[in-house]
Length: 269
Image (cartoon, rainbow, N blue to C red; front, side):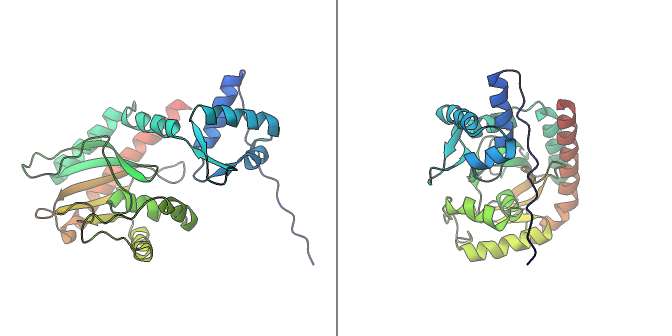
């Protein structure tokens, strides 16, 4: 029998000249995780002594920046860290450039356009530009909508691994908002498979009666995207068959937003 040799994990350096900077360096590692983590997994990843890491995690937990999972051995991002991330999204230095892209898209398609991100088990509106049409649904930046029955929410779910998706949905009730809301996990999985294959998602009166939405992800050079861009309109003005005509405009706007994000990250490095 041939023995299987496990490759050693490439370690992440925790750098900083002061305890505060080293704590911030550890927080950067934690913020990049999309799943629960344990003390032992961080020891293996960073190479830091277990007592040192345990003390650092205790500091972050006491501050509400991370929190323990139900088994008391695993951690995830805490309320304060999520609030910080949301504030950064809403008040980003790239806000003006993003807003200009949304405004241009709104002028092109004549309907309300929004930029959203996944926050916990909900979708948060990062920015939005309203149509001038008298009949419209008003949702301001900072508004939250459910992940399972919103167009960008379904995009984020579709691009997760099955285990990540199950973990998130385990703690998110599939509340029925309209007669078209999908509340069955198997049916939602089928819908998400279609979203993944198509590269876009729609909300056909699944969250609010009379509201139709079509969305695409903003591409990211740093891995899985956490930004989506969508067009939203009353169903009397935007039918499902018409929405596909808006996809090229949506995709151009998504590419423009991706360029803004990439340039912002390059300047920060």
